[in-house]
Image (tube, rainbow, N blue to C red; front, side, top):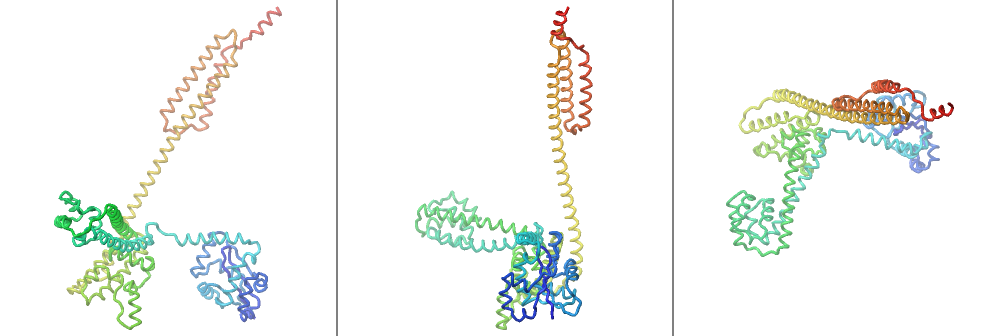
Length: 568
């Protein structure tokens, strides 16, 4: 009888289930589907053979990463070696839900692996009743483990360098294309709307954004005069055009327009102008992003075309994985499949047609130069994707090679060999990379110095505050000592002696406080006194106070004197 064991990978650990009555299950597949939902029936078919819990969240993440990549982890290997009956009369079959890890296990253990059919149904049932099949595992604990592992797995997959993320390029190029369409549509609307009032302006000013600015500036054409000629000249950047606009406004065939309609036209044209200004800002942002993420591709083919290639491929990594033949026709998929269907000529270029090289080449050389350019684009994208320090050295060299190839097609001048060019590029790139690293190290050192200075300054201020607090505490302590001495001092005959002793104490205390204050102000930046120093100071204070207390003799009170008189 053939034994079937099903391996199940859970967030809590690996589990191996033994399936009973394999032949019957294989024959009656619909019954299996029904019994999966019922825990009683499912328990009669499947029993837990072994369970290996993960020691930590890190171990779980390592194992799940290995499983997703189709690699047999050391923990999984040990678990299967100890629990799966590999040797014996009965032939063991291991059921696995993922075909990739199944192939890896088959290579490792040389056993028969089953992936589809019954195994998928049993894996579905195990996933549903896992917490009840494994003893000591609750549904809450299982869901927490799944949630925690899911978060850590996603976090590990999404880890990237913030400065070199291509998602922003994809979004910005999509927004740039959308803005071009919207600005064009809105400009046509402004032309049509303002054309009722001043139709001659359309022929004089052809640019969309300039037309909107002119509509915003002119407003009512009847109010145009010689004074507004300078402002018109600033917008149009041509004195002849400004004069033509002024002349056309005086003899225009347009209808009169009400002030409220004019206000709405002005407001709408203002929006279009602001959109055009934002488009320029976005283009600058795209240029800076491309210089960070794919500097070689941008240097070779331009920022906009390079961004379109990355966007069409999905990411820079995907573009780097594509062969040169795919990059060549990227963006012309419809034409390619139509040509394959009708058995016509396949397209020679896709998105790379927008580069300047293909436009400059002769008609007979367009296909050759597009093939050569696609080859260089693939090299540039791979360098950008896998290099640690981004530099545009390789892109500049590759661009030079394309230029040489163009001149070779036109004049016949033999271009340099690729090996020689790449040797030069590697040498220059290493120099540039070392220079960039040196600058980064310098910046890091400066940052650390600044942090140290801030820490020292905060420490000094804390020391000054603590010194002031210590002085205040000592003042309070001396005042309390004086009060206690005043209570204990004799009241009657030795009043003069007591008062002199008090005065001496007060003077001593004042002198000590003044000395401490002066020391605190002079040494404000120094560190505060340690507890050992404080103890020493207190001892010296008590020693100084003791002789002052011993000097006056213990006087006798008035009541005792009266008693002695009575007795006599």
